[in-house]
Length: 282
Image (cartoon, rainbow, N blue to C red):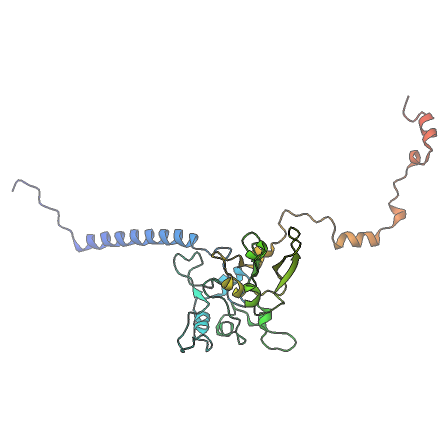
């Protein structure tokens, strides 16, 4: 035959060809996954379950088992009037949630935290990523829902209708710590002189971040919403330079005024003597 015969592929050659093919696909998969997971890190606005460790420690400790979300879902009180199981507060993050995949979080506008007295999600955690000591009263040694610090509710005064002069206390009434975490502040309407504003004010030292207020808000986009505490309350930046600290205070105590005199012979003279002297070299 005039044409060149097709070279026969030996089993050995096929093995190495397939091996290279699979290695290439595996490497590509690793690169794609690494690129995706770098984008899938938790948003700084992510809300974690009750008693969660600080975010960095939480991510190191959480094994993504989902037991907290399961306990939340199956809590006895999580049923409607017909006994049907309702959606749980906690979700396990999946692709597209903008939260580290496999970790628990919640969205108050969807399902807030109902602050169960027995805090089942915390008890279910096997690694103490949800540290039960954070919600245990050191005096009584009992669980205390008031010690939860999931976040802080923040009021947008521009979209809250109470600041428009309309009567609304939906968030106030929904708060499980009634008249503690949220209070209604009376402000007289100076324009009319007859009406008053009843404006919601959040006490960040009491607010647990459960999000029941956010869920109850009557505006389409909630005018009161929960943010992580470090976002809502802020913190001192690394560039801040303290002008006075304990060391300065200690130095003042130890200072001996006799040792810090700055007088010299020239400064002891009267101004007229100094000016008439030849100390200036004139």
